[in-house]
Image (cartoon, rainbow, N blue to C red; front, side, top):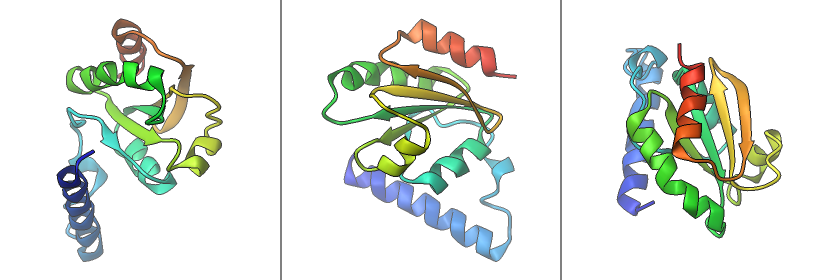
Length: 141
């Protein structure tokens, strides 16, 4: 993730928090109905909880930079973000050990699918695009 992407995320989060403080509703859950077309990187329990509550279906990719299979899965995850109605989230397990432990991530890559705010499926290892797309489609309303 580039410094520009990180700064953009910071600015978005800052604007959302300021809106919540003002109470003008600009950063509310209802506003973000369309999932982003690129994977979102989250750090920490609160960021993941916010994302899961914001979107109907969220696929979380627990990964590590040093993991070969995680690198193999990355293009598939990016393609899913661009082509499905699910929000795709990436969590670096080295930077978010507490979060990984909370969801019992014991190996990477681990994919965790949330539907309507609740964990619905967990997959360990690399899967193909069609398998993951079918999994997401099964949980979309």
